[in-house]
Amino acid sequence: MSVYKIFPEADSTIYSAYPTKNTGLDEILEVSVKNSLVAAGSDDIRRSLIKFSDSDIQKINTLRSSNAYNVYLKLYLSNAENLTSPYTLNFHQINNSWIMGTGKYLDNPSIFNGVSWYSTASYSGSSNNWTNTSYYITPGGGSWTTSPTTQSFSYNDNKDVEVNVTSIFSNWVNGQNNYGILIKHTSSVENNSDSYIALSFFSIDTRTIFPPCLEMRWDDSVYDTGSLQVINSSNTVLNVSNNPYYIKNKSEKYVFRITARDKYPVRTFSTASIYTVNKALPSSSYWGIQDVKTEDMIIDFDNSYTKVSCDTNGSYFNLYINGLEPERYYKILIKSILNSGETVVSDGNCIFKIIR
Image (cartoon, rainbow, N blue to C red):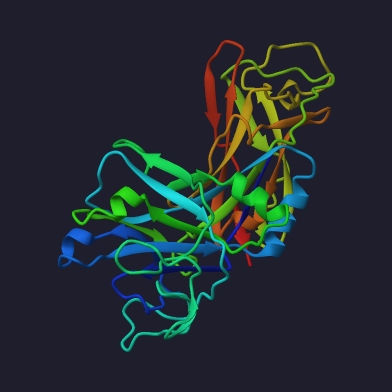
């Protein structure tokens, strides 16, 4: 299987309360409604825009070849205030080009050289306005196609965004203009003068390891054990036989080979060591990548998209390097479901570092 990540070329937050302000270089993206905190007859709505380059989009579309795929937009929560339960976010395909700009929310004087609530670019009176300006009290706020993609959150849900935007991605690769995605609360929340719900996510300018990304997932796994026996015991030792320890972040893909052997093999009369017999992992085996320092799962186990492959030489998986932050250490985790139904997770004794 494969997971391939690309990162934005532009993002920004637009503010109805500051309709000419540009915040293209802010380290966070806001998706908030703070109408209850302002005077009657006014509004404070905050929406975020995010765009990925056409070349990156075409590249990942080519990589997956003819395989069926899904594409997810991922945003990582920085802060949240006054959350209701449940709540829903809308993700719209933008239908106007826009310029990110170089402003920040706290700039004084404000910067106006990029996208804002009023304008797709540098605001100058009536020029460069969004084509649709019929929103709530303050006109502007972006322009998009109808029928948004949505993600809903209940009380116990992880509040990071992981929304399936395959339909939007398909529109782009099939010829529609790629102007990015706009993220907002539902109209019922934005149009309510008593609403107060605030979400902040890390932007592409974050100094953390949590920038937003677009993640394509497809299944290109194969499973052919040949003459290899299949592991069916939790008393198993796993290793990555070709761990490079250091991988340059410019590398496209690396194939990790996994050796598996019984921890307590049955004694036999043989001239070869019984402790070197390589076996195949079960067909229901999956890989994941964990950040060593934070212990966050950078790529989590997925029954559809992180399957471990197998050929006559043993088990393996492909890892696309581009989605991993450089100068950090990562650990490979392997999850196998045995014939008995028991689930076994091993770290594979493999830690590697991405270098510049």
